[in-house]
Length: 215
Image 1 (tube, one colour):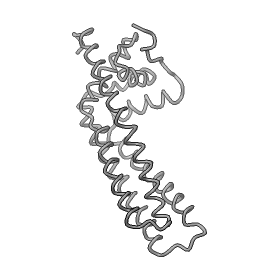
Image 2 (tube, rainbow, N blue to C red; image 1 turned 180 degrees about the horizontal axis):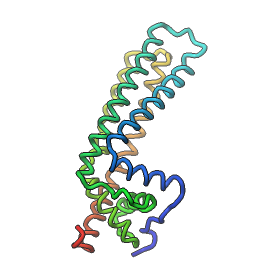
Image 3 (cartoon, rainbow, N blue to C red; image 1 turned 30 degrees about the horizontal axis):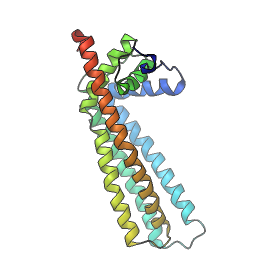
Image 4 (cartoon, rainbow, N blue to C red; image 1 turned 90 degrees about the horizontal axis):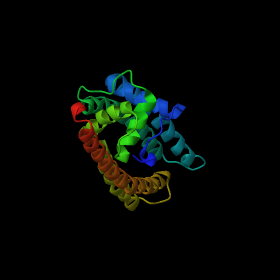
């Protein structure tokens, strides 16, 4: 087994935090969904207000522009709450009663995430065991496909906004920015999603062939 196919056990702060997040979310989906909704609402509203506040600053903003910004903030709060509910429900469906063990080593959990994308077994048996659980969950997850569809649909919506009203206003500039960002996301998400799917399939097949008793 070549060394370049091995994901190192990174015990840095970021890797262990992401590993703990995976363990926590799979073993406590409702609490995870609530906290994600809360954090998402705060960050979204702050960024929304800051972005439009900078654009509106120093301009003779109309009442309609202000109502759009305020209404948009309210809508984003609602979407964040909905996102938390959907996240909790989707996590339960993906885990299917077999979460990553609650006592798992966070570094090994994070290493398993990357290892299944590489499509090769790890020299650490525990990483392989966790990777097999994650690979099975990957089949039930539709998150990448949903993200691609949502982002792809958002591009023509914002493009229509530009066509209907491009007058240099903050709202028009926002539509332009979103078209650029969403297009880049679609271009990046498709190959990444396909590569991950191929890697997970190779990992699962190799694991089941090497360790048939644990499949």
